[in-house]
Image (cartoon, rainbow, N blue to C red; front, top):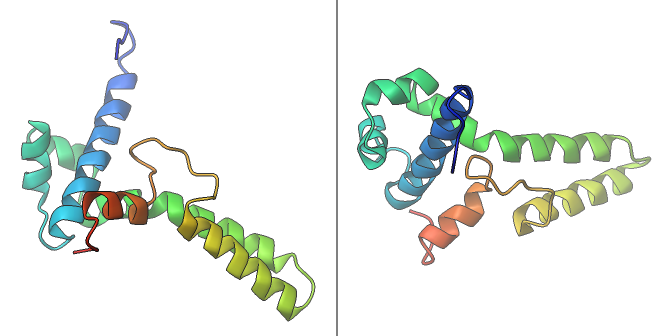
Length: 129
């Protein structure tokens, strides 16, 4: 990736995306409890302070990873709420949730917003840790 010398706003975003991608990989390999911020920093050849700059806690890093899927679920709920009748709302919820789980939804494919279930299943094809 080539970045112009004066484009200093791109570096923090690219670093944040790399952190999220590595955190996702390590969470899939070692689980959330088994992954420390130091492990993420070591994998990226950064200091732990650099991780803290972007994410003050490991929990905030996890929330950043989960935000895309939570946003998609919110859209499904909003769409279902617009339906008339309990059955139509239930069908909209089930259909929307199925699309999310199946990866059919409108997922951006950047490292920071890849669905957790897809990345974890690719990292650990025998099941989640």
